[in-house]
Length: 454
Image: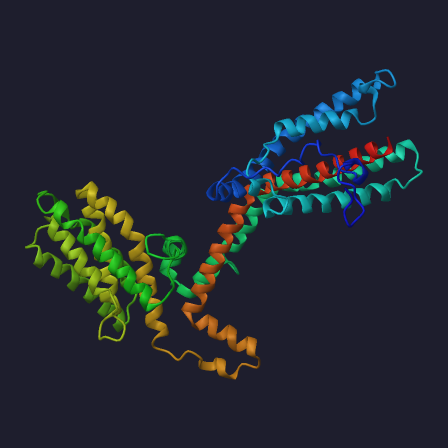
C-alpha cells in the first residue's frame, strides 16, 4: 500500500525503515535526588580535581615508561604505536581520578568544572605559543626539544608559583596588618597612645585587642568611640560580677601590698616634678593610699570579696571622667590601685586569676579609648584643616582627627590581611590544579592529532 508520500508501507526497506531494528537507547534518567545533586555539584568537582592532582605525576610516570617500552618494541605492535604512551598516561590518569556520579557534579557547565578547564586551556595556549616561538615548524631536533621543554615549563609554572604562595601570602598579609599604612598603624593613629603606654608596651596590647578581640558580638575588634568604650565597660562589669558567688564563701584574703607598690611607682614619677602641679600630684597619691588604709582599718590585707568590690569601684571611677571636675592624678591613682588589686586577687584565687587575665586587655583598651574620645570630644573636628589647600589635604586632616575613621580603616585592613594569609595555604593546590589542567589539555590535543592522522 502506497501513501500520499509515495512510500509503500508493506515494503519498509523502500523507505529506509527497519521494523526489527532496536529502538535507540533512551537517555538514562539521573537517579540522584535534588539534595544529592546540590552536594555533588560542589563536592564531586573538588574531589575530582584533588584526585587528578595526585594522579598526575603517577600518570606521567606511566607515560614515560610506556614511551621507553615503545622505543624498543617492534614497529606495528601496539606498544610501538605513536599514541601508546599517551593512551597509557590517559588510562592511569582516568583510573586514579574520581569520576563524578551526579549530573550536577559531572556537568561541563558546572563552574567548578568549567573554570579550571578554561584556565587549563588558556595556560596550555600560552605553553603552545612559547613552544612554537622557541621552535617554529621545521626546526631541528635539538631546538624542538628545547621548545618542548619551555612549553612544559610554562604549563608547570602555576605549580611552582603555588610553592611560594604561603610565604608570599604571609608576608603580604603581615604588611597589610602591620604598622605604617597597615591595620596596626591606622589603629595606632586612632588610639594615639601616650609615652607611658609606648614605653610599657600597653600600646601594642591595646592595638591587638582593638583589632582581634572576638569576645564581642559581630566582627572582631572595636572602634575608638564612646559606644565601644561603653561596650567594654559592660563586658568588664559583667565578667567581674560573675565572680561574686564563687568567691563569697572562700574565706580568702587579698594583700594590699601590690596596691601600695603601684602607688609608690606613681609617687616616684611625681617626685621629679617640683612645680606646684607636682606637689599636688604627690599629695593626691598620699591621700589615696591613706584612704585605702582607713577603709581597711590599717590592715594590709582584706577579704577577697571586699578586694573585688574595691577593684570594681576603682574601675567605675575611671569610666567617662572627661567633662567632670577631677584631677588627672586621681584617675592615674585609681588605675594604679586597680592594677595592684588585680595582682593581689589573682594571687588569692586561681578562679579570679583566670578572669583577671581575660579582662586585663579589655581594661587596658578601655582606658586608652576613654582618654582618646575625651580629648577629641573637647576640640573642634576641623580646626585648621579648613584652610588646607586641597580636598585630599582636608580629608587627611579629618582622618587624623577622627578616631572612628582610622579604626574603621584599621579593622578593614586587618580583615583583609587575615584573608590574604589564609589564601596562601590554597596557593599550592590551586597552582597544581591549574598546571594539571594545562598539561591535560595538551595531552588531549596531542592524542586527538595522533588519532586523526591514522
